[in-house]
Image (cartoon, rainbow, N blue to C red):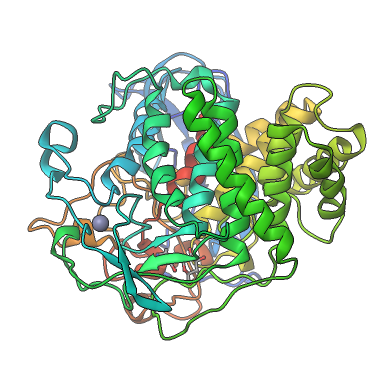
Length: 552
Ligand code: 9MR
Ligand code: ZN
């Protein structure tokens, strides 16, 4: 394809851009920056926006030459068709017979994707049978219900069921889980009006909004990761990843690993946040969550330095991190908001002004959660100084990302060298920063910039692939996900977000099939063997849910 569009759709009143590349090189072929640019640009390439019958709409297009984009290895043009505000299905065509994927314009274009992306977590449920009435052809028996052991005291055996499988593997990691809870609960709390839908869950109809039913599944498991002394286990895992088998066929023994301050900080943040959200629906549950958060906080106070042991002999997800300041910051902000206690407000100053990036929402860096907690709290909850500190962090970063977006030939706020394992996480992180920057400054441009990142996710990229299964005409379909590829026909439910392009090609398959030096945006392969470009993960789904929640 040489005309790249968002295959899921565009909102009628939002900015609407497509990307045109004269040289189609989806083969990984690179052109050098100093290579001669096509000298003659035929006026507009005869580009037109046509309707489903291929009849011209007459909509005026603005076509701007961007020039060479290093991340794609291509010369790009930006086609602006924002003037088309009428709902419908269209195509962009040029005078050489090239045609885009269908372009859907409508107020509801993201509803299905949003539903599916929120529903992904149901399919990740561990320790439950997935029934055909909820899971359709993905129904499967119960998994991982055998007793688990404490890693350092294997004689201590106990039941610890539930939670979501982390990703394409069956590990359950406290930091990753807590961060996922964070994305989903902040999405719910900030954009509650977009959550009036049932999700066809076993719990549907019990009076709780369904997204809270789904998140509760993880919370209940996470509560079991807390030790007597308030500290929280880093992960529950087998010693190595399961073979290529379905969840219920994996019978490796599971171990609860020792405490980390990373897990304990994330736990305290997630539990305090959840307590505040669930209070409205279930006071007793909210009290339980609050008590767990406070016990975790006491442990953190008693252990003021980083506590984390990598246990390299346990060869599953590491989720190691050199600093736990951001985890402590998140916990402190949510506990201040939940309890109003002075001690948390005092501590908040110490963490907020430490040298950390305040705009991150990933498994390693959760400082941005403190920002959402503070910036969207009722007036007067936090002091003006702390509020200004976070407001400035988001508006400064938003300003930079806005300019990076403008400088990028695919209208993405990422530079060629910023892509690595799970790059879609960073793309979505930037979208959320732009959204928050737009909300706190009132600059509408930042909001539109955020939408550009979703267009990229949904197919407006050099490979024309929608990185979300089942969403868009050419969607990712063969992720690294044991529960998918161990099925007879490799199948994945809709709404699963792929990790995305990774120029470091950290798996053997990607390293073999993607030539060295391939431009960053093309370092992706839709094949289950490529876990470093095409795995799925709960927190990649949830971060995309948070970014999309504004637009549904
Ligand atoms: O998302 C993680 C990515 O940022 C790391 O670079 C990568 C290698 O350490 O690990 C990713 O997380 C994986 C985890 O370790 C195990 N479950 C699957 C996760 C997604 O690939
Ligand atoms: Zn399981």
